[in-house]
Image (cartoon, rainbow, N blue to C red; front, side):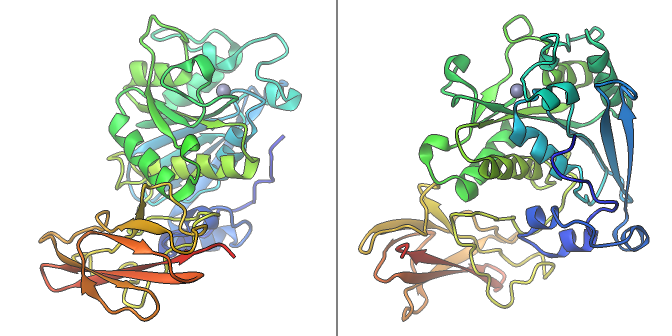
Length: 390
Ligand SMILES: [Zn+2]
Protein backbone atom coordinates (compact mmCIF):
# COMPACT_ATOMS: atom_id res chain seq x y z
CA UNK A 1 0.00 0.00 0.00
CA UNK A 2 1.55 3.22 -1.12
CA UNK A 3 0.60 6.51 0.52
CA UNK A 4 -0.02 8.00 -2.87
CA UNK A 5 -0.17 6.50 -6.29
CA UNK A 6 2.99 6.47 -8.32
CA UNK A 7 2.58 8.11 -11.68
CA UNK A 8 3.42 6.17 -14.80
CA UNK A 9 6.11 8.66 -15.64
CA UNK A 10 8.64 10.79 -13.90
CA UNK A 11 8.15 14.52 -13.58
CA UNK A 12 9.83 16.45 -16.34
CA UNK A 13 13.46 16.79 -15.62
CA UNK A 14 13.40 20.18 -17.28
CA UNK A 15 11.09 21.40 -14.54
CA UNK A 16 13.47 20.20 -11.90
CA UNK A 17 16.52 21.57 -13.61
CA UNK A 18 15.29 25.03 -14.49
CA UNK A 19 13.05 26.24 -11.72
CA UNK A 20 15.53 27.04 -9.03
CA UNK A 21 13.85 27.06 -5.67
CA UNK A 22 11.18 24.63 -6.70
CA UNK A 23 12.90 21.29 -6.59
CA UNK A 24 10.69 19.91 -3.90
CA UNK A 25 7.52 21.24 -5.45
CA UNK A 26 8.40 19.97 -8.90
CA UNK A 27 9.19 16.59 -7.50
CA UNK A 28 5.55 16.16 -6.61
CA UNK A 29 4.26 17.01 -10.07
CA UNK A 30 2.68 13.89 -11.44
CA UNK A 31 1.62 12.73 -14.81
CA UNK A 32 2.89 15.84 -16.53
CA UNK A 33 4.85 14.17 -19.25
CA UNK A 34 4.53 11.05 -21.28
CA UNK A 35 7.39 8.60 -21.11
CA UNK A 36 8.82 9.31 -24.53
CA UNK A 37 8.81 13.04 -23.92
CA UNK A 38 10.44 12.46 -20.59
CA UNK A 39 13.22 10.31 -21.94
CA UNK A 40 13.84 12.65 -24.88
CA UNK A 41 14.04 15.77 -22.80
CA UNK A 42 15.30 14.59 -19.49
CA UNK A 43 17.96 11.97 -19.80
CA UNK A 44 16.54 9.94 -16.91
CA UNK A 45 14.84 6.59 -16.90
CA UNK A 46 13.13 4.60 -14.18
CA UNK A 47 12.52 0.94 -13.60
CA UNK A 48 10.97 -0.84 -10.68
CA UNK A 49 10.87 -4.38 -9.40
CA UNK A 50 9.42 -6.20 -6.40
CA UNK A 51 11.25 -7.88 -3.57
CA UNK A 52 9.68 -10.63 -1.43
CA UNK A 53 7.32 -11.07 -4.40
CA UNK A 54 4.18 -13.05 -3.71
CA UNK A 55 4.52 -12.71 0.07
CA UNK A 56 2.83 -10.34 2.49
CA UNK A 57 6.18 -8.53 2.65
CA UNK A 58 6.21 -7.75 -1.08
CA UNK A 59 7.35 -4.20 -1.74
CA UNK A 60 8.71 -2.23 -4.65
CA UNK A 61 12.22 -1.02 -5.43
CA UNK A 62 12.48 2.02 -7.71
CA UNK A 63 15.67 2.72 -9.66
CA UNK A 64 16.08 6.04 -11.44
CA UNK A 65 19.10 6.40 -13.67
CA UNK A 66 20.41 9.60 -15.22
CA UNK A 67 22.26 9.66 -18.52
CA UNK A 68 25.16 11.39 -16.83
CA UNK A 69 27.47 9.18 -14.82
CA UNK A 70 27.54 9.83 -11.12
CA UNK A 71 27.27 8.40 -7.65
CA UNK A 72 24.54 6.07 -6.45
CA UNK A 73 22.16 7.02 -3.66
CA UNK A 74 19.88 4.67 -1.76
CA UNK A 75 16.86 6.03 0.14
CA UNK A 76 14.62 3.86 2.30
CA UNK A 77 11.49 4.55 4.36
CA UNK A 78 8.97 2.46 6.24
CA UNK A 79 11.47 0.32 8.13
CA UNK A 80 9.06 1.00 10.99
CA UNK A 81 5.43 0.82 9.95
CA UNK A 82 4.10 3.55 12.23
CA UNK A 83 6.56 6.20 11.01
CA UNK A 84 4.30 7.70 8.38
CA UNK A 85 6.36 10.76 7.44
CA UNK A 86 9.36 8.59 6.65
CA UNK A 87 7.61 6.37 4.13
CA UNK A 88 5.49 9.20 2.73
CA UNK A 89 8.64 11.25 2.06
CA UNK A 90 10.48 8.25 0.62
CA UNK A 91 7.56 7.73 -1.76
CA UNK A 92 7.98 11.30 -2.98
CA UNK A 93 11.72 10.82 -3.34
CA UNK A 94 11.13 7.75 -5.50
CA UNK A 95 9.58 10.08 -8.09
CA UNK A 96 12.41 12.59 -8.20
CA UNK A 97 14.43 13.23 -11.28
CA UNK A 98 18.18 13.51 -10.84
CA UNK A 99 20.94 15.09 -12.85
CA UNK A 100 23.55 12.37 -12.55
CA UNK A 101 24.09 8.88 -11.27
CA UNK A 102 21.49 6.53 -9.85
CA UNK A 103 18.76 6.85 -7.22
CA UNK A 104 17.51 3.61 -5.67
CA UNK A 105 14.46 3.87 -3.42
CA UNK A 106 12.51 1.43 -1.27
CA UNK A 107 9.76 3.67 0.11
CA UNK A 108 7.86 1.01 2.07
CA UNK A 109 10.47 -1.35 3.43
CA UNK A 110 8.24 -3.13 5.94
CA UNK A 111 4.92 -3.48 4.11
CA UNK A 112 3.46 -5.71 6.83
CA UNK A 113 4.18 -3.22 9.60
CA UNK A 114 2.89 -0.34 7.46
CA UNK A 115 -0.32 -2.23 6.79
CA UNK A 116 -0.66 -2.85 10.53
CA UNK A 117 0.38 0.69 11.44
CA UNK A 118 2.86 -0.72 13.93
CA UNK A 119 6.57 -0.32 14.49
CA UNK A 120 7.32 -4.03 14.04
CA UNK A 121 5.80 -6.85 12.04
CA UNK A 122 3.31 -9.38 13.44
CA UNK A 123 6.14 -11.50 14.85
CA UNK A 124 7.66 -8.56 16.68
CA UNK A 125 10.61 -8.30 14.31
CA UNK A 126 12.18 -4.86 14.36
CA UNK A 127 13.39 -4.53 10.78
CA UNK A 128 16.04 -1.99 11.75
CA UNK A 129 17.76 -4.45 14.10
CA UNK A 130 18.39 -7.31 11.68
CA UNK A 131 21.47 -5.97 9.88
CA UNK A 132 24.51 -7.21 11.81
CA UNK A 133 27.77 -5.89 10.49
CA UNK A 134 29.91 -8.27 8.47
CA UNK A 135 27.31 -11.05 8.46
CA UNK A 136 24.04 -11.98 6.78
CA UNK A 137 20.83 -10.17 7.81
CA UNK A 138 18.68 -12.18 10.14
CA UNK A 139 15.32 -12.20 8.34
CA UNK A 140 14.19 -12.89 4.78
CA UNK A 141 13.06 -9.30 4.36
CA UNK A 142 16.35 -8.03 5.77
CA UNK A 143 18.27 -10.21 3.34
CA UNK A 144 16.12 -9.07 0.41
CA UNK A 145 16.76 -5.41 1.26
CA UNK A 146 20.46 -6.01 1.76
CA UNK A 147 20.63 -7.80 -1.60
CA UNK A 148 19.38 -4.58 -3.21
CA UNK A 149 21.93 -2.51 -1.30
CA UNK A 150 24.72 -4.92 -2.21
CA UNK A 151 23.69 -4.98 -5.86
CA UNK A 152 23.80 -1.20 -6.29
CA UNK A 153 26.72 -0.48 -3.92
CA UNK A 154 25.42 2.98 -2.99
CA UNK A 155 27.78 5.81 -2.15
CA UNK A 156 25.06 7.37 0.02
CA UNK A 157 22.42 5.62 2.15
CA UNK A 158 19.58 7.57 3.77
CA UNK A 159 17.04 5.93 6.09
CA UNK A 160 13.96 7.97 7.13
CA UNK A 161 12.43 7.52 10.59
CA UNK A 162 10.34 9.23 13.25
CA UNK A 163 10.51 9.47 17.03
CA UNK A 164 8.03 10.33 19.75
CA UNK A 165 10.66 12.50 21.48
CA UNK A 166 13.27 15.08 20.61
CA UNK A 167 16.96 14.25 20.64
CA UNK A 168 18.76 15.86 23.52
CA UNK A 169 22.30 14.59 23.06
CA UNK A 170 21.43 11.08 24.17
CA UNK A 171 18.62 8.83 23.09
CA UNK A 172 16.87 8.53 26.45
CA UNK A 173 14.07 10.94 25.63
CA UNK A 174 13.83 10.18 21.95
CA UNK A 175 15.80 10.84 18.83
CA UNK A 176 13.55 13.18 16.83
CA UNK A 177 14.78 16.23 14.93
CA UNK A 178 18.22 14.77 14.31
CA UNK A 179 20.39 13.32 11.58
CA UNK A 180 22.64 10.49 12.73
CA UNK A 181 25.75 9.59 10.79
CA UNK A 182 29.16 7.99 11.00
CA UNK A 183 31.59 9.79 8.73
CA UNK A 184 29.06 12.23 7.29
CA UNK A 185 29.11 14.81 10.07
CA UNK A 186 30.20 17.61 7.77
CA UNK A 187 27.42 16.98 5.27
CA UNK A 188 24.84 16.44 8.01
CA UNK A 189 25.83 19.71 9.66
CA UNK A 190 25.47 21.61 6.40
CA UNK A 191 22.05 20.05 5.90
CA UNK A 192 20.76 20.70 9.41
CA UNK A 193 21.96 24.31 9.15
CA UNK A 194 20.08 24.71 5.88
CA UNK A 195 16.89 23.00 7.04
CA UNK A 196 16.85 24.91 10.34
CA UNK A 197 17.31 28.19 8.50
CA UNK A 198 14.61 27.59 5.93
CA UNK A 199 12.10 25.18 7.41
CA UNK A 200 12.18 25.42 11.21
CA UNK A 201 10.59 28.28 13.13
CA UNK A 202 10.64 26.88 16.65
CA UNK A 203 14.18 26.62 18.08
CA UNK A 204 13.06 23.66 20.17
CA UNK A 205 12.54 21.81 16.88
CA UNK A 206 15.92 22.65 15.36
CA UNK A 207 17.62 19.61 13.84
CA UNK A 208 20.81 18.35 15.44
CA UNK A 209 23.55 16.01 14.26
CA UNK A 210 24.22 12.83 16.21
CA UNK A 211 26.84 10.12 15.81
CA UNK A 212 26.33 6.43 15.15
CA UNK A 213 26.80 4.24 18.18
CA UNK A 214 29.94 2.12 18.23
CA UNK A 215 29.57 -1.47 16.98
CA UNK A 216 29.34 -2.91 20.50
CA UNK A 217 26.92 -0.30 21.87
CA UNK A 218 23.15 -0.31 21.62
CA UNK A 219 21.22 -0.02 19.43
CA UNK A 220 22.99 -2.48 17.18
CA UNK A 221 22.42 -3.93 13.73
CA UNK A 222 20.89 -0.90 12.04
CA UNK A 223 20.85 -0.81 8.24
CA UNK A 224 22.82 2.44 8.18
CA UNK A 225 25.50 0.97 10.46
CA UNK A 226 25.97 -1.98 8.14
CA UNK A 227 25.99 0.20 5.02
CA UNK A 228 28.63 2.47 6.54
CA UNK A 229 30.82 -0.28 7.96
CA UNK A 230 30.48 -3.07 5.38
CA UNK A 231 30.28 -0.92 2.26
CA UNK A 232 31.93 2.31 3.32
CA UNK A 233 28.82 4.28 2.31
CA UNK A 234 28.08 7.75 3.61
CA UNK A 235 25.10 6.75 5.70
CA UNK A 236 22.48 8.92 7.37
CA UNK A 237 19.49 8.15 9.53
CA UNK A 238 17.05 11.06 9.71
CA UNK A 239 14.50 11.31 12.51
CA UNK A 240 11.61 13.75 12.73
CA UNK A 241 9.56 14.36 15.86
CA UNK A 242 6.11 12.84 15.43
CA UNK A 243 4.50 15.49 17.64
CA UNK A 244 4.12 18.01 14.81
CA UNK A 245 1.84 17.93 11.79
CA UNK A 246 2.47 15.18 9.25
CA UNK A 247 2.76 17.62 6.37
CA UNK A 248 5.58 19.45 8.18
CA UNK A 249 7.40 16.23 9.00
CA UNK A 250 7.21 15.08 5.39
CA UNK A 251 8.57 18.44 4.26
CA UNK A 252 11.48 18.12 6.67
CA UNK A 253 12.31 14.63 5.46
CA UNK A 254 12.18 15.56 1.80
CA UNK A 255 14.25 18.69 2.46
CA UNK A 256 16.87 16.64 4.30
CA UNK A 257 17.12 14.07 1.52
CA UNK A 258 17.19 16.74 -1.16
CA UNK A 259 20.04 18.61 0.54
CA UNK A 260 22.01 15.46 1.30
CA UNK A 261 21.83 14.54 -2.39
CA UNK A 262 23.04 17.89 -3.67
CA UNK A 263 26.42 17.97 -5.28
CA UNK A 264 27.18 21.24 -3.53
CA UNK A 265 26.80 19.49 -0.17
CA UNK A 266 28.38 16.15 -0.93
CA UNK A 267 30.84 14.82 -3.50
CA UNK A 268 28.29 12.03 -3.81
CA UNK A 269 25.46 14.40 -4.74
CA UNK A 270 23.20 13.54 -7.66
CA UNK A 271 21.12 16.72 -7.73
CA UNK A 272 22.62 19.91 -9.13
CA UNK A 273 21.09 23.29 -8.63
CA UNK A 274 22.74 26.67 -8.52
CA UNK A 275 20.01 28.16 -6.36
CA UNK A 276 19.14 26.87 -2.92
CA UNK A 277 15.63 25.51 -2.79
CA UNK A 278 13.53 27.34 -0.27
CA UNK A 279 10.00 26.09 0.17
CA UNK A 280 8.93 27.20 3.59
CA UNK A 281 5.38 27.49 4.77
CA UNK A 282 6.25 30.03 7.40
CA UNK A 283 8.84 32.23 5.75
CA UNK A 284 8.16 34.20 2.59
CA UNK A 285 10.45 33.23 -0.21
CA UNK A 286 13.09 35.84 -0.86
CA UNK A 287 12.08 37.64 -4.03
CA UNK A 288 14.78 37.51 -6.64
CA UNK A 289 15.11 40.58 -8.78
CA UNK A 290 15.76 40.77 -12.49
CA UNK A 291 19.23 39.75 -13.50
CA UNK A 292 19.26 36.89 -11.09
CA UNK A 293 18.08 34.18 -13.44
CA UNK A 294 19.61 30.85 -12.72
CA UNK A 295 22.11 29.67 -15.24
CA UNK A 296 23.65 33.08 -15.69
CA UNK A 297 27.35 33.80 -15.45
CA UNK A 298 28.76 31.59 -12.76
CA UNK A 299 31.44 34.07 -11.72
CA UNK A 300 28.94 36.60 -10.38
CA UNK A 301 28.03 36.49 -6.70
CA UNK A 302 24.72 35.12 -5.45
CA UNK A 303 23.13 37.29 -2.79
CA UNK A 304 21.39 35.53 0.07
CA UNK A 305 19.71 36.98 3.13
CA UNK A 306 19.27 34.85 6.22
CA UNK A 307 18.12 35.76 9.72
CA UNK A 308 20.08 35.73 12.97
CA UNK A 309 19.32 33.62 14.85
CA UNK A 310 18.56 31.43 11.90
CA UNK A 311 15.20 30.20 13.13
CA UNK A 312 13.74 33.68 13.44
CA UNK A 313 10.66 34.05 11.28
CA UNK A 314 10.49 37.19 9.18
CA UNK A 315 6.72 36.82 8.83
CA UNK A 316 5.54 37.19 12.40
CA UNK A 317 7.39 40.17 13.86
CA UNK A 318 6.05 42.90 16.09
CA UNK A 319 6.04 46.47 14.87
CA UNK A 320 9.11 48.12 16.34
CA UNK A 321 10.92 44.79 16.78
CA UNK A 322 14.56 44.68 15.68
CA UNK A 323 15.82 41.70 13.68
CA UNK A 324 19.33 40.92 12.46
CA UNK A 325 19.65 40.06 8.79
CA UNK A 326 22.78 38.32 7.58
CA UNK A 327 24.09 38.24 4.00
CA UNK A 328 27.32 36.44 4.82
CA UNK A 329 25.87 33.23 3.35
CA UNK A 330 25.98 34.86 -0.08
CA UNK A 331 28.17 33.02 -2.54
CA UNK A 332 31.21 34.96 -3.66
CA UNK A 333 32.77 34.74 -7.10
CA UNK A 334 36.38 33.51 -7.10
CA UNK A 335 37.69 36.98 -6.41
CA UNK A 336 35.51 37.46 -3.33
CA UNK A 337 32.81 39.94 -2.29
CA UNK A 338 33.82 43.59 -2.34
CA UNK A 339 30.91 45.05 -0.41
CA UNK A 340 27.42 44.56 0.89
CA UNK A 341 24.85 47.34 0.41
CA UNK A 342 21.47 47.29 2.11
CA UNK A 343 18.25 49.06 1.13
CA UNK A 344 15.95 49.15 4.12
CA UNK A 345 12.26 49.99 3.92
CA UNK A 346 10.10 51.02 0.97
CA UNK A 347 11.84 54.39 0.68
CA UNK A 348 15.40 53.26 1.39
CA UNK A 349 18.44 53.61 -0.83
CA UNK A 350 21.45 51.31 -1.08
CA UNK A 351 24.06 52.13 1.53
CA UNK A 352 27.11 50.18 2.56
CA UNK A 353 26.47 48.45 5.83
CA UNK A 354 28.51 45.26 6.04
CA UNK A 355 27.47 41.64 5.91
CA UNK A 356 24.95 41.97 8.73
CA UNK A 357 22.42 44.64 9.52
CA UNK A 358 19.91 45.25 12.30
CA UNK A 359 16.50 46.29 11.01
CA UNK A 360 13.64 47.67 13.06
CA UNK A 361 10.27 46.80 11.53
CA UNK A 362 8.36 49.99 10.87
CA UNK A 363 5.52 48.76 8.68
CA UNK A 364 3.33 45.72 8.15
CA UNK A 365 5.22 44.67 5.04
CA UNK A 366 8.72 46.06 5.23
CA UNK A 367 11.07 45.22 2.37
CA UNK A 368 14.82 44.85 2.82
CA UNK A 369 17.17 44.29 -0.08
CA UNK A 370 20.86 43.46 -0.04
CA UNK A 371 23.15 44.00 -3.00
CA UNK A 372 26.44 42.15 -2.95
CA UNK A 373 29.24 43.23 -5.27
CA UNK A 374 31.99 40.93 -6.41
CA UNK A 375 35.54 42.16 -6.79
CA UNK A 376 35.12 41.59 -10.52
CA UNK A 377 32.38 44.26 -10.72
CA UNK A 378 29.43 41.87 -10.87
CA UNK A 379 26.57 42.10 -8.41
CA UNK A 380 23.42 40.35 -7.25
CA UNK A 381 20.52 41.22 -4.99
CA UNK A 382 18.26 39.37 -2.60
CA UNK A 383 15.17 40.73 -0.89
CA UNK A 384 13.03 39.74 2.06
CA UNK A 385 9.82 41.31 3.28
CA UNK A 386 9.56 41.63 7.02
CA UNK A 387 5.97 41.24 8.11
CA UNK A 388 4.08 41.89 11.29
CA UNK A 389 1.77 39.05 10.48
CA UNK A 390 -1.55 40.82 10.05
ZN1 LIG B 1 12.14 4.15 13.13
